[in-house]
Length: 300
Image (cartoon, rainbow, N blue to C red; front, side, top):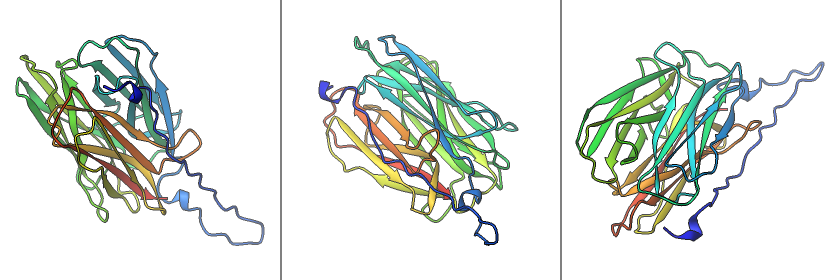
């Protein structure tokens, strides 16, 4: 991997939405931020910068807020690390409030690196739960599974967890359904072995689901296709919408590419509006490949 690509950081403009206030004697329109996702923000947490084989970080929403989705960034490893755990808490009857990201070195890597976890948080939204689906453990080279929201709910975020493969597999697809005019309701997760692994392993998909949010849609952006070591794509919500979650898909990578960045923009005082995806070849790979970014967006 090129030394020039190490420790790079993506930047994306943050948008601050200024709400109009109501004055005495003047009838003001309702604040658009109250329509769908009030209190939207992005929280981050970072592991220490070391050369350990495994690192983890957990981003926790502030008290009183819930988790709509998560994200991550691997800093410094440039394709030599795979995210093994991208796990929201919560359950089928409990709203999630935090997300844990854990990553392993695929092969021995002597340099320092770290994990950054991102939590997209908001004031409580009706019906928020976390659903999971697991592909049973076997030694197949590829595993896939789909987590589907309960009837009447829509997808705000997606995540995954691999069991027993300890750095020898990489998630290629974290793909929500939906379109630019229809709300997502499920996520399709697929993982490939990055190096030969003889033991059984399994894959869990997580869907974070809520009662319908106004204007919920899925926006897709693709990179160009080529054999470069690194490729990226950014999916932006329309001007009238904010980001609540996202996903990605590596096309034609087949385990030879590791998604290094899955990063919503925004911050503690700013709701996100876009999501950045970036991936490196894990070893030299001569085939053309590309990456797609998915943004799940709701009305402000």
